Image (tube, rainbow, N blue to C red; front, side):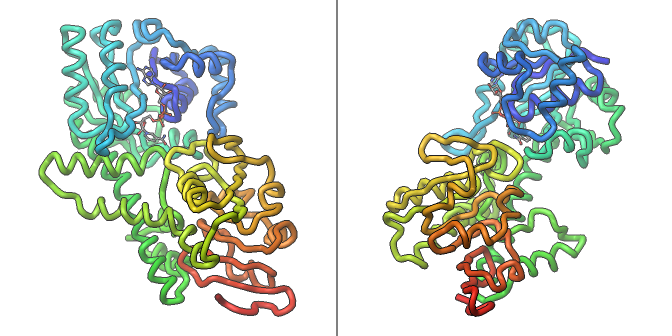
Length: 438
Ligand SMILES: NC(=O)c1ccc[n+]([C@@H]2O[C@H](COP(=O)([O-])OP(=O)(O)OC[C@H]3O[C@@H](n4cnc5c(N)ncnc54)[C@H](O)[C@@H]3O)[C@@H](O)[C@H]2O)c1
């Protein structure tokens, strides 16, 4: 068992630290955010990630996991240091490496010569070399630095840690690569050994490809809508082809979160620096921006003006099972509604407040008095909600569904007006079964 330090206790750092402790390692997680560390030291999990709180708790009880804001304490005896700090976007879309730089600069003052530094943060190709030179500059000697990008998904991060599709180990030193190979030996996950540049590129290319898949199906959904075809059936038929695959073929109001938006932009910048114009990926981003405005366009088409309209926004997180609202399409929708003079009120099962909009505690509250509803996140409590609740709670049940939660069969005979993505709209009344398609 190894002594490990994890720098950064966000979604990646906290999950990595907790899961490594579960594998039996002695883990110290460190963060510059003292409030966060104090919450963690109290045994409380500061983020919503299924299974994390209890796993954290059991590792704290077993004394395999500890939290500190004292970097020296965390790293001085560590055999390996995982860097999991944020890499947000700069104004031009490139990755901001300042948190990585500060972390490695500070830790190089305290670490042992044999300690392996492992970069988990998503960083542009070439960062491994930069980290080496920053550390050399500050410590006056060389260290072993391995690129080990993280592929976990928020909402299923614990599962993904233990059962991911691959572990990528990008290293220039055989010894450091072997260290990580041994380190992960208890896991059955396939390993891929690469050079650091390729490891860094694998992460960006993977996220960019998945983002492209989402924008592709969203483009197809726009055409389906014009033709009167049903994107759900089209996506199902496409996904049955094993060369294509079913994941990431859900049409909707676009991707958000802390990874796809920033990583696609960063890769466009990386390409630019090499003299290559990554037109495909730029278009993926443009399509996503358009998609985030889709429900607003539909509502404008329906009502002419949204001034004074009370709008129920269902779901705030960028996807279900997380409290992460970074780049969430729901937030753009709320802001646009406000610009248009509408009065949005939001509900989310986990996100209890945002600065610029009232968030209520129940679906009943958000729907009461609303002129129309917009479904932004397909939390089970939202996607499984009986349509009767809309019928019985709203003045007039008008729903703009950005996540295609309901099927045509669910709608049959309902007194509801329903607009979704890439499918014909529906308007029905109780008296006359499926009365009319809009
Ligand atoms: N969130 C995801 O789903 C996910 C998945 C794969 C990869 N990644 C990548 O992993 C990295 C971390 O992402 P995240 O979502 O966990 O970020 P986050 O913003 O949730 O957490 C980053 C943490 O690092 C801390 N930090 C910053 N500088 C520090 C320093 N010098 N010393 C100690 N702590 C410091 C911050 O206070 C913060 O708590 C990013 O590069 C991201 O792109 C994220």
